[in-house]
Length: 340
Image (cartoon, rainbow, N blue to C red; front, side, top):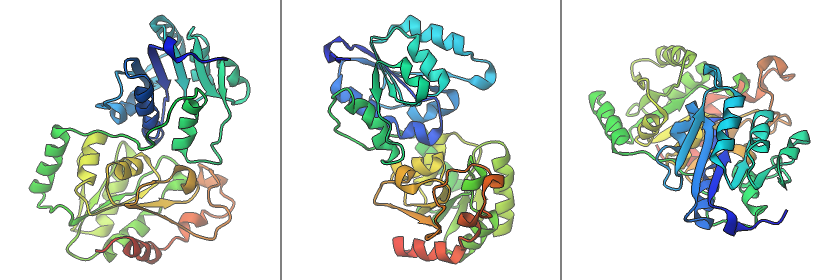
């Protein structure tokens, strides 16, 4: 289908989840703004991801929904159709988003060639998810339109409120900026999680001048963080319950952020934090941090790295990628990356 950019005045980008994936979509927003400086650019995502986009200077509106609270696909379809977009870019391509796009009446509907779902789009993009980094995968949707790409750097915005919160937390807990090591031991997939006892052993290797700040997000993560705190001892402190932007501001005051492959990992490196990212079942070349102030640490030599298995019961190799990744090896890698 021939694309006439002069007919585009209202744009919707769709990526329902997850936190890191939505963050890696933000270069699409910036490049859309570069190509359509006067257009209205909106983004549809689940409510728990909205903090990733809040304050983005290239975005006009964030539209959210919450499947867990009863938001139906029918309501989404009706709402998006009513808004009359000229261009919709679906960066997710699951059945729900494909049906939403198909029923939108948008003249230009961009999406990836994923089985029958490609029928929802009239501008179809060949997916390169197994060949290029996720950022480039997303930008391929703009390349399919012949648009100019000027940036590939994700955007995550904090403001004075978040920064003052972090300053006050450090002050009240007698923490000194750059004399704190952040640990992020949680993960959405059990297979992506390095073991808490290994995190604890690693924490004890850091010089005594460094306090240990343990990050956690929701639900059971706090319980796991408390157990890790007990294993490390008195110099370990838990962050308070806080949203993503407050977490980012706390991480920015750490000398180093050691993390599993999670949304906060992406927030950290995008925010300029020295980041040591531990990888196993996910492919670091496709989904890892891209900044010069980050290092990827993995159990080198295993042929099964990047298997994308999500559950421990699915792993035929006894979770060797994490089980056999020793704290001393991780610590030595960190020392080769940053002076402590």
